[in-house]
Image (cartoon, rainbow, N blue to C red):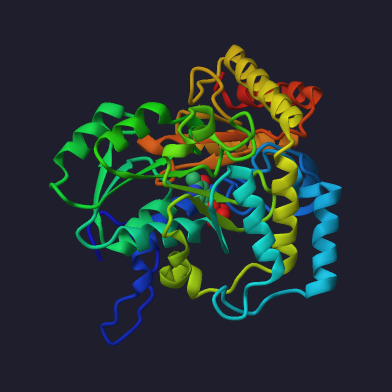
Length: 416
Ligand code: PMP
């Protein structure tokens, strides 16, 4: 057992000098036990017993406003999207039972890729079974031994895992720091392959990357650029293409990665690219080849949702309004927020510590509001956060109700 990891109350005797491979998790087990000992509801085990709409569900028996889903554009109950899924279920059955390169490519997968190409105005689109697999697959396949990946230190776990799987040299730089990125790029040996990985919106604090400057620096140093737009697709940019569109750098991005699990409102992942050799990825990318493809109903809902998002400017405008109102209201109540101004649909409320954060999370749930409790290692700088993610279907009145809930809970817990 390594130092610093607390022992469980009664370590199990496995006999024969065997090591319990679970002992490495003892500190997490203890932390969780401590948190729940006071009778606190488990923030990481919430069950939605019934989902009433994109913004409401019955959670632990209570009618609850959802402010902690990634359903930014509220597409999960869109009648056209549901109809497309039902039709595909009837026409094609429940699942493909196989890989995209064998028996797992149906008409619906191709239509979904066509919708993505149109949405982004790009030549190629490849659909993966999740966004996690899209990052894992693309990054590990294009950047291998001897290549260099220069990435923001606050990158999502799927990006880090893709880097590890590909065996490239991994060089992190300080979050959103253009100078730090350039410094790292200058140190890459002459002639080595270089991939810069950025995100449009960083999901913990809801802050946006300075993509115009960063992409320019990456290109100046001859690097390829991959941008994960998981939390910006559908919402940011005139046509909802993401921060790349808003920053005017879409044509300089070699790869855009995204997910269907957020604004699109279902599950799945993708990569779009203009690279002339991109299609070879379908044969060499292991997380694409060696897993089952998405069920036909899922790609049908995704394709319909993506096409509708192209015309979602009214929803985008309302979501921005919600984001501004919530950010301003929380600031006025005296909460400390992750960004000075609203930059996305995510507003992070910084908690003094895990205990206060968990108490606040529970107080809000009792008020009838669900938010995400986020803690290290998912959060930067060891922060405990209550992450609020807004939906285009939240009404103005609901945002006012949410602020009232925050005020009462904040006073009860002693945060404001
Ligand atoms: N990238 C980022 C930035 C994410 O936040 C997430 C999911 N939270 C993913 C990728 C993975 O997406 P998926 O849920 O489709 O696996």
